[in-house]
Length: 356
Image (cartoon, rainbow, N blue to C red; front, side, top):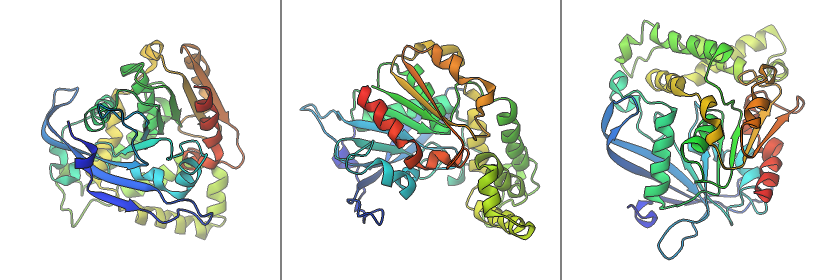
């Protein structure tokens, strides 16, 4: 078992994260090495690392078990550090905020294929094992139990892809947490419009002549797929009002298109291909009754990825032992990207934790 004291590579006392004189956060980072990992599909990896960041300090019992752990899970194109962005951290981790780090020890893993965790762009390219959301959850579980020796979690909260994995956490490890909060996610297999746009991204990578079966020169990465992926991502995760504000004229819209493509070059094609395809095993619908922890689902009325008009959420929540659903109405929202603004939904988290 790896002790936290041996696992720390970096101790950073951050500056105040907003002009409102927020107290500094205690942030640690490290890698959790795993060996002879077998994925659910039978593929193997001899050496794999799971990178993680923590915020706050662990409260341990005499045996060294962490007693105040909270697990936060990021979205498809993000990393654990997304939760350190001011629009999230300034509204979650401060004194008397929903996840006050004087009280909670917050664990932020980078999913496989993202951030500092093992990913295809590290060198294996298209020979990297194919993983799914179930694999992600089981590796997160190993991190929590092996590195932190936590016998229980106060909360599992995830946004977008992380929200989908939060549903799976409740099914695969019932009773391991006090509460579950999936944000910007639905408990059904990826299908319909959600699958159509994902397949557009996947095909744009595989059909890009510069992809070369995943063996492209890193100095000359494929480019054409970004002309599909980057603008499409903005269309699906934003909302019409915000996009109109950002591009009120034809020229502004073309300039925005060009900026999106330029910013998209930070995405590695192989990493993106694997992460988009990894949702293929996601389908919590058949096993919702296995969830025993109280669950709060938070979605947004203007979310094109999880549209409320599909009528998925209400019948799904009715199958849970303790389920609650909040649909945040249109207004000062950002479509799917509202998940990045905890000032909009954080008070629901605080209220739920106060009851559970």
